[in-house]
Length: 150
Picture 1 (cartoon, one colour):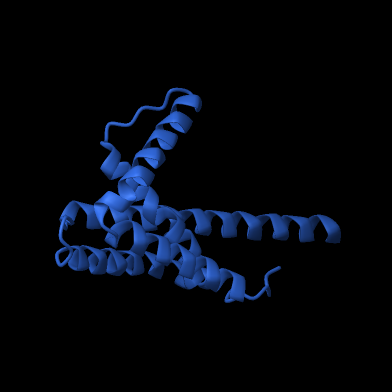
Picture 2: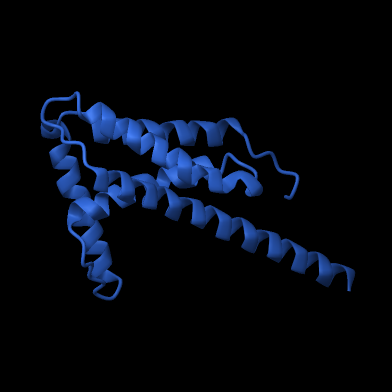
């Protein structure tokens, strides 16, 4: 497993798909994405409620901006070797800045500096998930090697 390739076609495809979803959901006219956004928010809060009544002190736009970039952070971080995985966070920042800049040119869209912060936070959460999974997998592999040698 330690020598498994990082940059596989499947991982590249998943990262490209995550980037495409971000592009569509953030740059399409609001009228087209509003039904999806409302369902996603409803689903999020339904899941949160079933997981012990978790309540958030943030509005749904904040939650959606963070959640939208978590998969992108995971997908891009999965493409990089562990030592370069933190570079996913500035990548998320750059994508978010590009989206907010493009939104200033689209009628009905309103760019927001807070969105950049929340999107970058989502990319950071995704990156952290990958780092934790890789480190725990690495530790489990090492523990298994120690037991088998022992």
